[in-house]
Length: 156
Image (cartoon, rainbow, N blue to C red; front, side, top):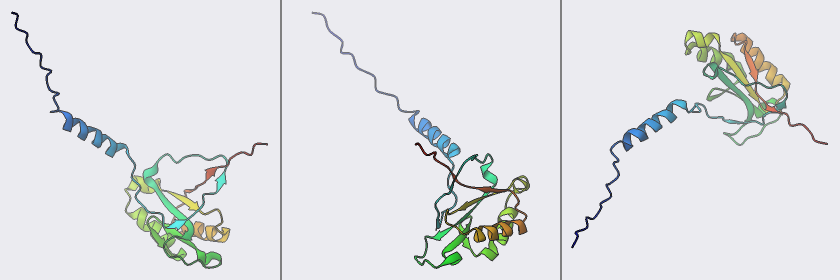
């Protein structure tokens, strides 16, 4: 009689699996942009045409103008709209100081390229937008970007 050898399938070597997992995790940590601020105001993005994306996002300061999400009170006129600079809701009189403070914490090269991205609700009164723009001028933040969505064309 011929003796048959039983073939045993070798086990899968998983010794390098943790290295692979940590490499993939590290890759996603590097390439993923984490949102650093929480939007505390409601705003509907206005629509426009000829829009372009910002290239250097590390030197962008976001200023939101909209109705408050935090407290449920809804006033009349300008009082119902709030200005948020970065992560804080600030009165209109403090916008220039907040911008100066943010710029002082930036490296010198980024501070020179600093751009303010103004994200205002579609129903924001233009008087309030003008006051915010004046505060930005006082803070010497002269690069202002207006945020909006591409206008959808109407099909006939």
